[in-house]
Length: 166
Image (tube, rainbow, N blue to C red; front, side, top):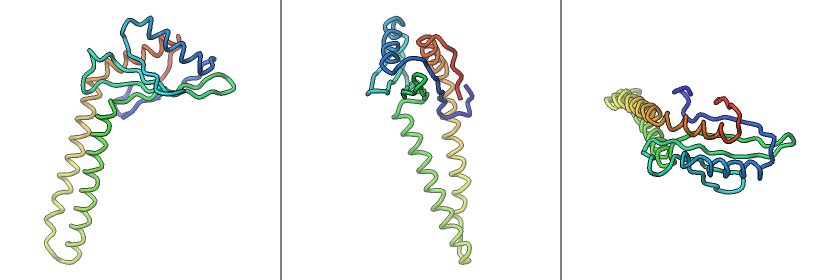
């Protein structure tokens, strides 16, 4: 799994119907002795998480969605952080982007009018803040990498097939 991917994903075709896929996931959870916790959200949507006793701020989760086709069922997997962590970083990037836009707009307007434009110094500071936020996210992804591999191995053991991540 490359560190440049923010939310790694995969697509896997199995020769089972959707009900059999859910049944196989339930059986795998029962056999796994607390390797992963499986939450069935609604028909066709499943979250696979690390057990609560081992979960930390950077713990990943695997969201599986199923789609019935003529050949079987397509399972789409999406690895990502806890939605709270995802929301925190999303809010951070959006805030920095909005501040960057308005500081740039304000500074360039003042520059064109021949006025002082010191606010343009905020642009490299905001770019640095975005870089720091990215480095923090990458560090958190490295901290959760072992658990992400664990979730992936749980999935592969469930369907007895190797799956490559895109």
